[in-house]
Image 1 (spheres, rainbow over the protein chains, first blue to last red):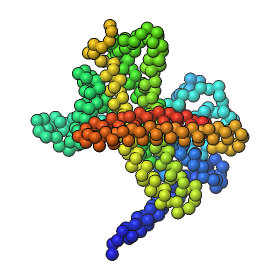
Image 2: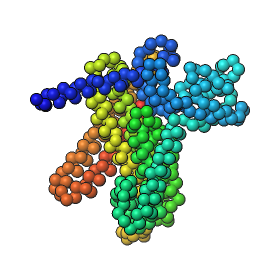
Image 3: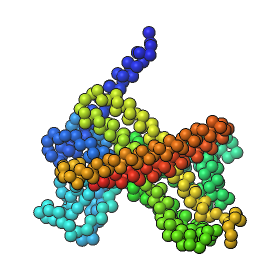
Image 4: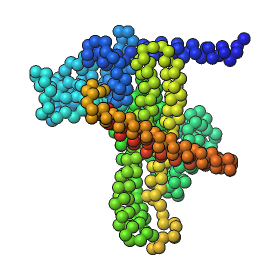
Length: 352
Length: 80
């Protein structure tokens, strides 16, 4: 009889059997290359290796087969000029063309192989994050061009296909985020808000795929997003915005002097918090999932796997949710900052 | 990660661990309060539950941002 017991038993069998898939992902080659021998599993290093950017796209290792895609390394040095080569030249700690790599940091070496710190190296390689950025850009352009084409084909008719998935989302962003926060002048900012929302959402989801690159967990990427928000807010701020920030009306004079430096710092901290919030949420989620998987290797026992797989699955679902929430919150706060920048003087409760 | 067990490095690790724990505690307390009052207000006015849920999510994300500031600082201490 198919009772609750037999269902639980099948679930238990499945959770142990999935360890076969994990065990083939032996990440020992990172440590073995360094010490040359079987070393203790270092979870911190495994986690950093998965979170950080890298000059090659490492998918998985099976016995004897290392699925890694080498990426182009582009180095510019004012003393030596431009060097372009594949990162596979750096395999097994070889030096190539006068450069060597150590923990993803490229430094120049002189003829005897010693590190030469007098040569400045500008590393503008196509790293894993850059490739992921290009892939997600192509994905976004493809998807939204097909949505736009669908609208042109179906003018006056009901939306079909991929249109019908994105239309409610776009309408939600327009009605609940843009119009509510920005007001009547929302149309100027809609392209940027939509771009930010879908860019962050798609990249968060791509990072959750096993073997995906952690793009939105790269603080340089989130810094650029926050910087663009800051630039747009500053450029589109009208007279009332600057007046409210620098010389807050309606408060007594000593308080205004105190509020002034606070507000100026506040101009910087608001985009800064946008950057940190997105970066930390995504990176922390990845670290948690990797820690649960790393538990299996740390204990070297099969009996930890129901716990690891269960918690890992739960955290993965939570991360899917967080991917959407973080995109939503970034877009919402950006819209709020735009709204405060273009707000017209509608309220007459200040003593002007 | 930690090859040299000097006392100050050990204490720094303890500080990082405790800091991350307290940051998580703060986040839990804050978001718990928000969740509580959100559920209470939905119970009072079920028709407004959509708006209340949205406001709750926004406030929770903002608080989580602040807690993750603390976590990032502790990670920096522990790993660098």
